[in-house]
Image (cartoon, rainbow, N blue to C red; front, side, top):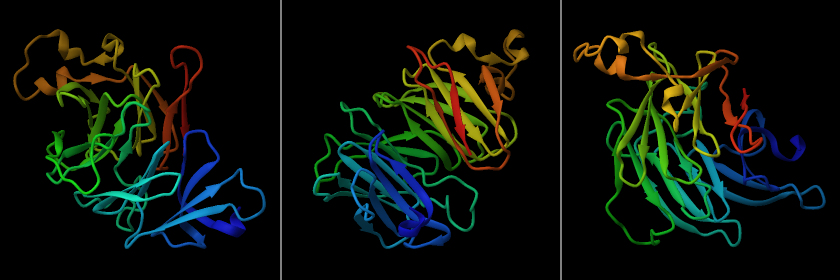
Length: 290
């Protein structure tokens, strides 16, 4: 309802429910970009805004699950109990995240992901060290207490995108160069795969796992989406030089990388998201929205 909400900068749905988290933005916002509004579409009448969370700085990203609401600012994360009697549970300092600011208006929103699994409330966001990811299990963490952070040193340059698998067992990330995507085990923090999107730098807008974790999709500002196999990696393409054998330390990482098994075209430089369809036992389609 544009009359009540105005133009929107961010929106996040709680699974397939009637609850939406909305952040003002665009050309005619009615609410500041430092507030998160909760819209209940099942509520009768015109006034469907049921909650408002206010913050000291613009909101870059919102994530929701059945029992938590996570809000990302430029260098801080807030975690609330949700949706019943929302209470702030945690605050986390993060590495400065310029995404979504006027300096980079076409870039995707802040880097944060929240595992939807009922069995594991895992949260991932940029760590304090350049190129690192920090993992927090919200199910075992206790409000008001501190513990040693679980950190993955994922990249040598700044993290540009990150996503958790549906059960929270895997995390995929890319640096701001956008050429390589790395897959890690969240339990052991071991690197499992290195996937190559391309050779030229790109801004990754989205990383998405298939529901069964067999595939990973990546969309960037180069006007292409890429699909990688995670379970049966023989499906991924390799460099022709891989047949040669050892090629030395310079070309080695390039030759050993795995390339996407399939790609598709999307509007170039149009920020968007991608996801897998849920038809049958295995994913048979990729959905991209720009």
